[in-house]
Length: 355
Ligand SMILES: Nc1ncnc2c1ncn2[C@@H]1O[C@H](COP(=O)(O)OP(=O)(O)O)[C@@H](O)[C@H]1O
Ligand SMILES: [Mg+2]
Image (tube, rainbow, N blue to C red):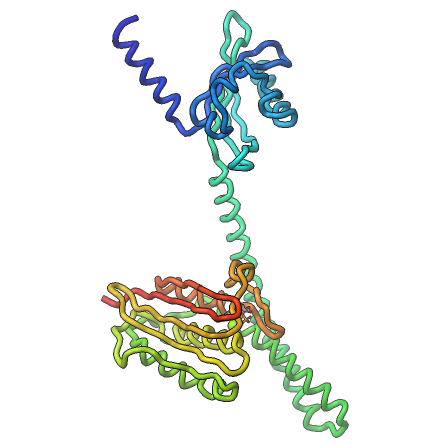
C-alpha cells in the first residue's frame, strides 16, 4: 500500500472512532439473521460494552427481542429496496434511557446481493424535545390571546351583575338573603381579581421605560403595604441604602413585582413574622431580595412555581409570580427562589444597572 493511502486509512479510523454518532456494521447471514461486525467507540460507550463482548453477536441477542425485531425490520427494508434508507427511531440505553435517533442505513452490495449493512445513528432527542417545547409554547401563546379576549369580555357582564347585586343589597331586608348577597359579592370580587391579574399578564402594556431609583419604588411599595402588614403583626424591614443607582425600567411594573412578592411573603407568614427587603449595588447589577420567615416551599412546589395558575392558596390565582417573572424578563433581569420548608423563602432579583 502507498504511504498516502495508509495515512488516509489511519485518519478514517480516527474519524470513525471519534465521531459522536453511533456507527455500526452488520453482516447479513440471511434475511432473518444479522451479526454485529464492527461498531465505533460512541456505540460501545452508549451501550457500555466492549468490542470483545459485542462482535459476532446476533442483533436480537444484543439489543433484546423487541428492539432487535425493530432493527431487523429496518435491515430487511434496506435489503429489499437495495437502497440507502433513512428514518427516525427510538432505542433504549442502559444509562441514558430512551433516545431518538435519525438513522441512515446503507446496504453494501456485492455481486448483486446485500452482504453487509452500515448504519449511522445521530442522536436527535434534544432537538425533538426542543421542537415539542416550541410547539407547546406557541399553543400556549394562542390560548393566552384567546383567554385574554374572553377575560376582557367578561368584565362588562360582571359589572352589570355587581350593579344589580348592590341594588338587591340596598333594597333587601331579609337577613338570610343578606348573607347570600355577601357571599356573592365576595365571589364576584374574586372573579374580578382573577380577570385583572390575567389581563395584566396577557395585555401587551404600553411601556414607559425610564431611569428609576429603586429605593423610591421600594419605599412606596412598603408604605402601601405597611397597613396590611401591621394588621397581621408582620414587620417590614428595610435594608437598603438611602441612595441606589437607577435602573432603566417601567416604574409601575416594578411596583407590581414587589407588591406581588411582598404579598406572597405575607401570605406565607400568615401572622407574626418578618419580611426583609434588601437591595444593594453589585458590579453590573442591582440586587433586590425579599426574604420572609414564613412556611417556605416544598421542593415539589418549587418546580411548579411561576407556572400560570399554580397556587397552594384557597383564594389564590396563581398568576402573581408568572407576572413577576414576565416583568423581570422584560427588564433583562433574573429571578431566583430559594426556600427552606418551615424556615422561609428568599426571592432574589438582579437587574442590570442603567449606563
Ligand atoms: N414567599 C413565599 N413563601 C412560600 N410560598 C410562596 C411564596 N411565594 C410564592 N409561594 C407559592 O407560590 C404559589 C404561587 O404564587 P403566586 O403566583 O403569587 O400565586 P398566588 O399568590 O395567587 O397563589 C403560592 O400559592 C405559594 O404556594
Ligand atoms: Mg401571589
